[in-house]
Length: 166
Image 1: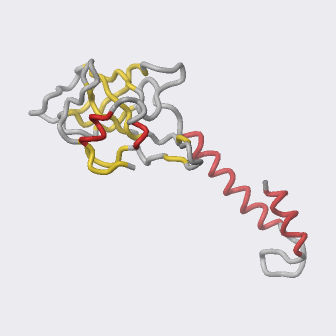
Image 2: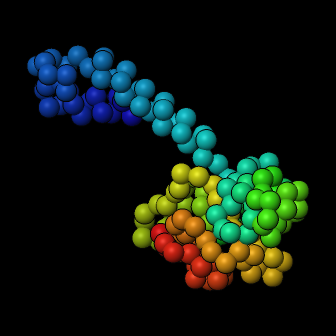
Image 3: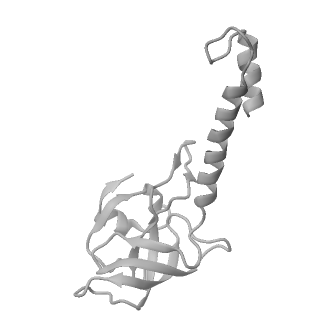
């Protein structure tokens, strides 16, 4: 990538460093650092798989859960997929207690997902809404943005509880 960028800059006859020459060694090293950081950020953004800790964004009483198993796919869960999770942190007087095994729907994932119009959606954190075996939410409120891809996955009740649909 840096070589193609350098060749485009050399066709113009001036370097981006201000001089009239084609000395782009500083530019190439800077672009290699940017590419290296981009590769590192892509390695961290993976599927929600076993032992992934997720934030709970409803008022069911749980704060954090750890994924036990993704119910769809070999690699892991993405937006709208259902997981089996264990509650790791919970509020003392909530509906869900620490150590309980629950089902959850992934409503935010750090891994990017392409949309039909060519755009991509990704979030800063991994978040889940707890549901029962029939797929109905345990809590009565959903906090934070929720993607509209959940409508295609038949989780309309979660969309109605959310304030902001992304």
